[in-house]
Amino acid sequence: MGCLSTKSVVDRLEEQLGETCIVIRVDVHTTLGGELRNEYHTGSVPSFVLISGDGGEIFKSHNVPDYSEIIIMIDSG
Image 1: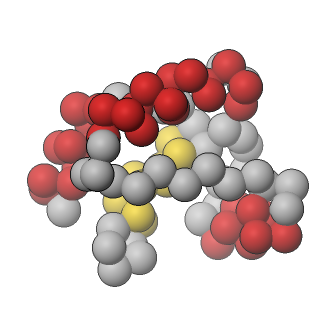
Image 2: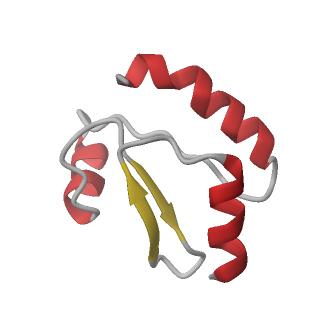
Image 3: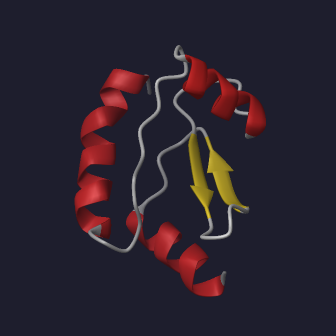
């Protein structure tokens, strides 16, 4: 699934999460995006990284996580 085809899925996920999480979309072709791609070792796009409040990586995937996966990770973290 390419970046553009995942947009609607991520939009829906962002809506479901409400204020539980902040969804930040990053263009890997920008300076900041490149730095984040290198920091979190996300070679292919799209990539999804769930980061805790203290900056630790909780989850990383090239597939869109579903709402229940994210809630479980947040609750167990």
